[in-house]
Length: 79
Image (tube, rainbow, N blue to C red; front, side):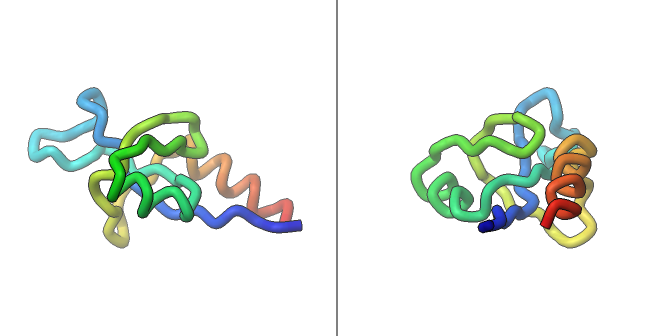
């Protein structure tokens, strides 16, 4: 059984940004879709269902979307 690799990526929708344009949360998305989105501008789907183009990468310690984390933690237990 193959597992899906995920990585935190930002959601930069206007309703989730702070005053300095930093995303409120970073989301988990499929790793193989990140570069394509960053280069081509295509949208990715996060584990929580949020859809957005990748425009920034998360730094260590960045806030993670609670819904994505819940789904991700549930997937890891099944491995």
